[in-house]
Structures are given as C-alpha cells and as structure tokens.
Image (cartoon, rainbow, N blue to C red; front, side, top):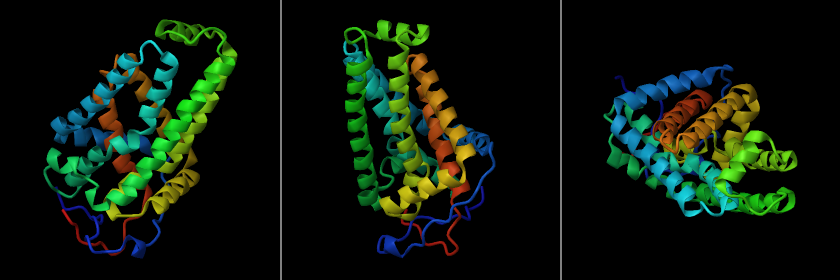
Length: 273
C-alpha cells in the first residue's frame, strides 16, 4: 500500500491554533456506501482489532440492559446515551483505519492510546457528549412521566407498546425528543474526533467543521445517519451480537467519511507516531 497523501498529526510542539480552518467538501448522495466498502476492507485487513472494539460495544450494551432490566425507562435513556457516546468510543477504530491508510500494519496497542497527543481537545468533546447524555436521560424520564399511561414499564411491556403502536402520544413524544438529541450529537460529531485525532484541531473548530459538513451535505449525511440508526437497531435486536461487527463497520466508515468531507492540508506536517 502506498503512503497516504493525507497529513498526519502535527508535531507535539506545534500549536493547533496555527492550523487553518478545515475546508469542507461536498460529496455525492450515496457516498456513504463507498465509506462502508472502505470500512469493510479495513476490517478484513485487521479483523482482530476491529472485532475487539466491536466486542467492547456489545459488552457495554449487555451490561446496560442487564443492570437496568427492571427499570426500562432508565435503560432506554442509557442505551440512547450509549449511542450518543459512540463517536468517542470509536476513537481506536479511527486510528486503526488511519494506520492502514498510512501504509502501516494496524496495531491494536497503538490504537488504545490514540488521541493522547490531543487529549485536551478530545476530553473537552467527551465532556460535551456526557453533558448531552445526562440531559437526554433526564428528558427521557420527563417524557415517561408525562406521556406514559401506566406504571414504568418492563422490557416486555415497553416492546409490546412499540410493536403494537399503543400509546401513540408517548411514542411520538419519545421519538421527537430522541431525534432532537441524536441530531444534535450527530451534527456535532460527523468529523469532529477524526479531525482532533488527525490534525490536533481544537474541539470548537472540530464541532463547527462537523456542523458545516452537515449543512453542505444534508442528503448524504442524513442517509448516513439513517444507516447508522438501522445498524444500531439491528445490533440490539440480535441481543448485542450484531454490534460486534456493525459498530466497527460504522467506526471505520466514519474515518473515511472524514477523509471525503474534509480537504487535506496543503502543507502536510510530520507525524508524532
């Protein structure tokens, strides 16, 4: 594999404030299928590392649904929060794709410390996601309290209402609130962490670049968001087993989405690792 033309991480002594604002490109409506194809190649090249992160996703999902199985109103909020934190949890997957793109053999151990060169910015972004998660959890409880017609549900009762469309007011309210929070996080994280990983960009600039990416590419990125949502539903419907493969696929594809959406730096800088 040839050495990537894309820039690597700036040297430790460089100032991220000196970096130009990322230039956002427009992509085709169905570009996400190319990202998924590239992600599949990444997974075939390094199945062990990819499946390791997928297993972590599945394990976390199982822990949530097991611990909170008797309080499903909390489980639903935590599961959605789990998905909101997905961009941060996929940091290692981005690094595996980045290593392969650079012509290196992907090393899992390296990916476990990915982002340490820009821990401050990534930490700020993680705090933002956690705050949104906590607000979403509270909003979920409020929706249940206002619109759920009986006592807080069990898993079976909750799924029964969803599948039979009982209590439509609750389902609509829950869907609208969830869509607002999910859209907020998706818009802010489309390319945010890959930017912080690849260029040592600050959190605010990375979030703004993500929002601009969504604004300039609404159709392709909404399709990409719908595919991610379908993958998540499929993963949970298979008792988390599907997450082992689907979440790494999404993580690797997100790296390729970043490469497609953000113009490379004109003057690449040296890598630290």
